[in-house]
Length: 326
Length: 303
Image (cartoon, rainbow over the protein chains, first blue to last red):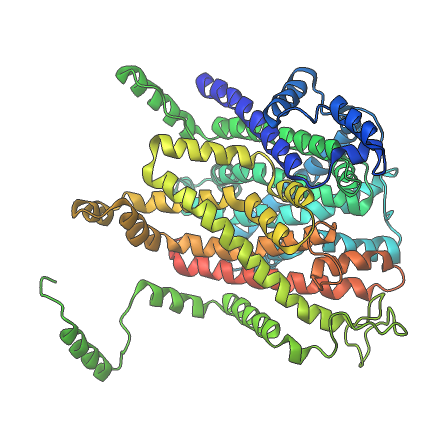
């Protein structure tokens, strides 16, 4: 187990290097000269050349790449924003909590709604409740999130004036953006919970626990749900990734000062260091989340743990390196 | 079953079967189609999809106005008998633009998925087939790609390449490619251990032949299902990217970009916001319904 955790932690290093590499390549293929953004389009050639030299743009690509990676890793230096002249990291960290709240709150709310929906649907398969909640889940995964947001804005803030149309100065400002990201999560997770629960309640151990006269709620919650949750947990990681993407759009619709809005503003202003920084920080957050989910997943699924132990024993006997358990 | 089976005998058998009243042999595909036909929701999804494709083909005859016909005196009109879905801020007929929009979202969504599967699927198939080190290397690279959430990756690629259909297709295909490679890999892994693969190998089939002729056709079920869902996701991504101004831009009547233009008019002309979004939802819903039906039909164990 410990070995797996260490291996999984070490794996973060190539992942982060890979992300930096992808981001660097993307910045290289971007058309346009970064010097334009610093000194302006109509600067004289000498000024441009000086800026170019100062920014290190005259060095070969490989050197620039290693310099970029070195700066990010040793100093956390993601560059300087062309727009404000401040370090990108500092600007990102100020906005990061809002994006995190948005993402995790929407996944959390979705779980609270989706798991009971999925369980009830599975237990009462083909009933009215099942059909209604699955119709709702299908609606959740089919509706374009940004359109759902626009419709809720139209109804709840323009017509009914219940919630503010933008900003998070009031707590109620969070509700619509969380609903926007959450709706797709509810749809997805309810569908996963239902199908996983359906599979579980047909297992022999459920019949056994019923046969020994266990109360139905205990059978469903303790024996059923606990096993059915494993694929759901596996899916939560993905949903967090999807929600991070959703948060970018939600922030721009509801004008929430988060990493996403910062990035989109930077894209419009061709302020590439800020875009790069935003991607790096969100990818980093996502990788850490996936790491935690993976470890959690191995912790809650006793089968995986057992499999890992067995593999380890064999490995010791044969003196062969352990295959990764995944 | 030891007798030789010649085309002549097949003919005779067919004749016999026809006399008995059953003309069709039962194949897995026919069984699946039978199951699919019984699923009313899936058929509903299929019918909607066929209708949308017909609308796209005959858009010229259905749309009363052109995509960029500006009736500047009739701006932001609510739905009426003249303009069933109203007009937008340039006085363009929204219904016509929504109709022409089918020519954009459906084909582009489909192309994105084909490219993602062509690249990701091949890599996934190779990884599953060879296993071991090859599998490890390919899948670890996919892991790195997947550490950037797909939507974010698409935004990043679209932002660095700039607007336009080709760049949008590239952005979506590349960002979804790792997930597609996983689907194909998993599908191939499940058929890899079957005896018929072993026997094909024993009679000397080459790797390519094994992969293309035996493994892919037998794992096509889950792949086909996920293609349907992938087109739905791709259409959602296309419209989201266009909405934030990173995909297809005006005056092309892409549904997301129509919404993007309409959001400023939320207070004066809310109808501008309703119909394009409704169309995206109907299209995606139809694909999801059909995909659900396909999954149940192709793999009855899951039901």
